Image (cartoon, rainbow, N blue to C red; front, side):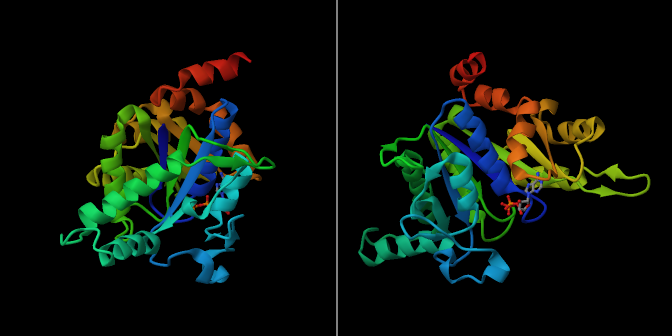
Amino acid sequence: RKIIVVTGGVLSGIGKGVTASSIGVLLRAMGLRVTALKIDPYLNVDAGTMSPFEHGEVFVLDDGGETDLDLGNYERFLSVSLTKESNLSTGKIYQSVIDRERMGDYLGKTVQVVPHISDAIQEWILRVAKAPVARFGSSTKEIPEVCIVELGGTLGDIESMPFVEALRQLQVLVGYKNMCFVHVSLVPVLGSPPEQKTKPTQHSVAQMRQLGLTPDFIACRGKLPLEASAKKKIAMFSSIPKNAIISIHDVSNIYRVPLMMMSQNFPSMLAHRLRLEPYYKKSVSQ
Ligand code: ADP
């Protein structure tokens, strides 16, 4: 079973949700069954009590789960019906660990963020990755082959630290070939003449590495397509192959993002990284 983690740097609202959903579309096109998990590092147990002015609309799932609106993107892009397990928050994970502590499950041990919270996060991710999901319009559930995990917020936030640590440990547990990281970063344009600035991305990749995570792909969000010179600079400073740096520039319709990724050869690189080539080759030959 494969896990793809989408993280974000520099600022929030950078397009992690759209990137994660678009990756799902590409995997579906390869004939793979896909599920998704959104991690929201806030303390609310779910989004049901949060102001839509601050947080955007609450998305209600078929099982009544009140979740982040990214779950709506996932359902539309992946054509699946998700459950409330697919939205994990700090509140939810702490609640589950504290409930177990009250039941005496930890047998007198001191309950700590590492290992108890970080283990509970890994168990949750693996549970969602294995849980059968129903396709829209079908009542039969299928076991997914790939799970896309989106880590909300920005890497380096205090709130997301236990999740970052859990993801680092999870890659060790499931193995390098089964889990990869796509980091979404910002490339702003400044100055006269206008220049695409790569420093925020360089810093955010450096920070990601400090936290023990290595990005396999960098998705650069910006107004215009990423220029070759900017790509080269990011590749050099972050030690990532040039073609693994993907431009996710602004488009009038977010359904174009998967096509934009395809035009940059992203599906084949992703398939190679996660040893999914047979699926990719079959889909191309059809
Ligand atoms: P995050 O998950 O990082 O908070 P989202 O994926 O929710 O960010 O995207 C934030 C906003 O930016 C959304 O309104 C989304 O439609 C828009 N957006 C994301 N990517 C693009 C893009 N390539 N072109 C235009 N709009 C985009």
